[in-house]
Length: 373
Image (cartoon, rainbow, N blue to C red; front, side, top):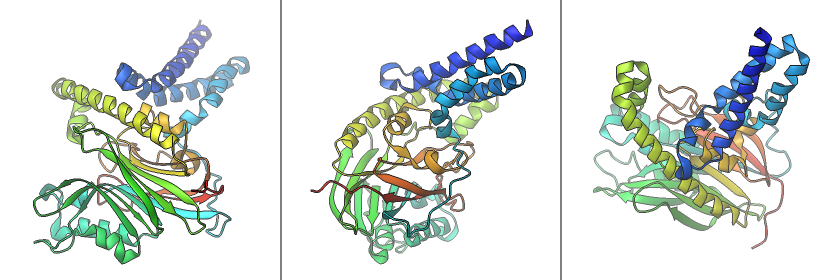
């Protein structure tokens, strides 16, 4: 009886895994409840590993079932918990065109009063760290720049500090300019020439959007860099924590959170489909940097992971959490590259705590020539 119950439970776990993977494929604009099923995938994969260990001790024949599922779903497992303990970072002199990339959501460099600290210390340190980073290409979300000195001096002249002062070309895609001339939006900085540029709007009702720059490498190859920020859920961290910390908090917060969660998922599914169509038409190798506002077990992430290499999932170790807050194990910032690239190194910089996102850096080598123009 006990073995029969364990066997039936194993079958239910396998069905759960398969159903959750199916949910990942469903865009929220078509059937938004599927997104909740997708979020259970890491739990289902964990239970399948538990079932595998159980049957390895009980019955090798039955163990084949969860083992087969574990092998077939290993790429999905790696999305949330990357395991590459044997990866060795090659020397920078390894053959191929090497490109260092930094991406980060900089939270407008903490310019708002509620984000500031004494002497604008965190703002200064974050801009300085980014400016002096050796990355060849920098992609920033929630970017802010003040071209002219204000009562804060030139602390927030991020374009000058990260761009010309460090011999980088600059492309800023502005979504808003405030009363003192401060610019909000996205930014790409490059030590290599930017030969073409453009923006992708997600519609008039959102400031989230995408931008791209075609960059000419010293080898003569051209690559296309996309920097994008998908729709947020406009959910305060405190509300999320309160919703699961007590029954009263759940009853008070859950309905509003659910509505915002649904709106965010639907918007992101539309935005990522629009972007994927553009990615697929690119004549050049792709470098994609993004704040997805979505977890690795989401439709948005899946559409990218099915087509491109994720830097962390490919060679990283651990969860690779990029969110700097009370919600644990959250990786919403990612870099993806097309098949022409080899991923040599990737790091989440938890030692840089000046935003609510940790910066992500990676190094790539272009091992196939780009098409000629």
